[in-house]
Image 1 (cartoon, one colour):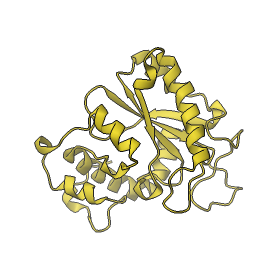
Image 2 (cartoon, helix red, strand yellow):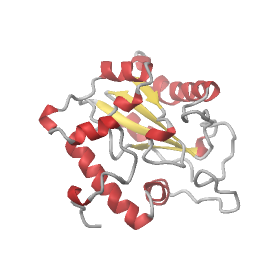
Image 3 (cartoon, one colour):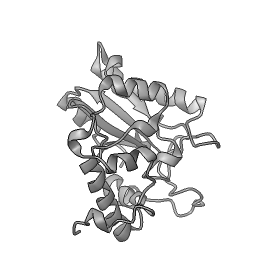
Length: 218
């Protein structure tokens, strides 16, 4: 697939929703960008101000160009992720209301290992060095509220339990201080229709990265 020049993108009709902060970033240079530190991340997640998460300006421009090309070739980023990254088969017998539907063993998100996959984020936010950005994709729908698509209290508890058992515990002592997670509200998602949770790990060991991302859903 050929490269798309950023100047060819219609910023009034971008391939995914741009926040006011995104547009601010696009008007700046990389050397002016403040990389998001671990302390920044903890505050952003604690206050649920997820709109403050942003990419390095040059990365955001490349992501927009890439997304533009993906949208033309696959019809959308969601289709690309399902077909090329997750290799999941959509259940065509199920009604397609908000997005693709997948057969799953458990109706509880992240309860069955075959119902989710963990991948390294191809387009991470502009974090400080040493912060690994992973995405846990779920075949099982994750309930969100109707107001802005934020996780419900029950969903938050289930995700907390999953993150602790799958990411924190393998890190052993001090693991709880090295793992953070968030789920973008629906309005902030560039990949809509396939539920996913972002997981940030500080100084993740290579062997654990390999284990976390090992495919167990096929």
